[in-house]
Length: 320
Image (cartoon, rainbow, N blue to C red; front, side, top):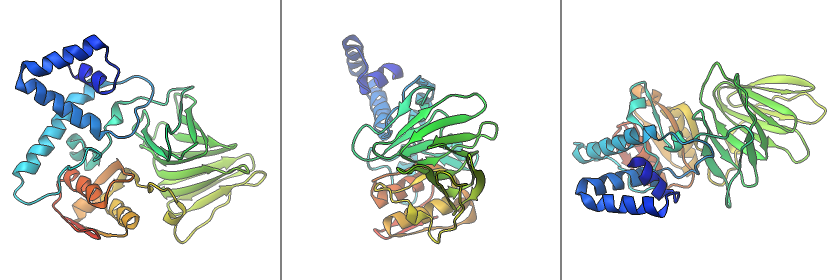
């Protein structure tokens, strides 16, 4: 029944399937409760679904995770910020067992497949989840196309994109733009194809290699490369690398990022101070994205996902 519910919610159900779901919802209170649980999960997954196959096997686990989170919030002995809007990204508790949590439930989407391109469908940027769990935020008018490959994850970019790449040591992640290749294993970085040719690469986490026909350079977090036509890629060390990321929706995409780092970038984005107490909590790794959610909702999501207790005002948040 979960599959039919998702088809109804996504507008893909036939009239007969929609009627079947409607009848089933009226047959028992637990059926209606199940429908509402699936609907809450569906509406929490704000980024656009990607083309390709859909693996529905994770839905029951996600619904159960949501129910468990709600139950914990009700019985918690201390006040916690809960999930108060449908835009909050749920976390999967199964990942917490290995010291990491993950937001964004379009993880079951598959794409982009070879020959299929992603591009924002409306005004502004749009965030997608790739087939390997990586996140990409595409600027308006940009285009990302998967070009296949078994031994690597290779894409062609036209425009501008912010990536949070899932680590896969056996399959490098490669972005081609204007004849320049950016190669990573797992990191956060921005690629901007320049109108005059070449590209600019900004590295937030990890290490990347930038290659064109005139040379190559390796970058680590906090470094920038300009790869201009006819010249080898340069290496620069700006004082404020985050200041280069002028995304209107913010640059909050994280992939296996320590919560301490997440807190610093969230605080900067909202002009607030976010304090994380305890080394274990600070080291908890987060895979998540946020765009235009209010500060309280972002912190509330982090707090609930990590089972932390939060104290939050408009300019200060404490997680412990």
